[in-house]
Picture (cartoon, rainbow, N blue to C red):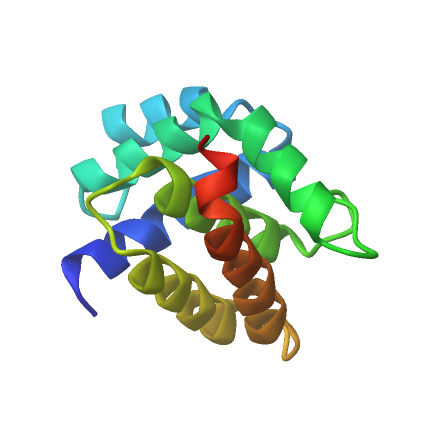
Length: 138
C-alpha cells in the first residue's frame, strides 16, 4: 500500500469515527495528532484530506446529494459517505491528484472496507463528479 493510499485510509478512519460518534472531525483530528495511540502519527496528507473535506463539506454534500439519484447523504453507508467526501474533495479541490487516481483509490477502499455494491456506487458517483467538474468549478 502506497503512502498516499495509507494516508487516505487514515483520513477515512478519522472521518468515519467522527461521523459515528457525532464528533467534530477537526477536533477528533487534533486528538489523533496529539495522542496517536498505538498507531503511527497521522501522515500530513491525512490531515490535509480531513481539513479539506471539513472546509468544503457543505458544497461536497450538496453535490453528492444532487447526483446520488435515489440516495440521501444520511442513507449512504457511513464508509461510502466518507470515501465519497474524500474523493470529491480530491477531484475538485486538490490539483496534485489526477482525477482518475482519486476515483480509483476511493473505489479500492470501498472494495476493501464496505459493501459488495459500494465499489460500483462510489465509482459511478465520483465519475459523475469528474464529468461535471468543469461546470462545478466555473
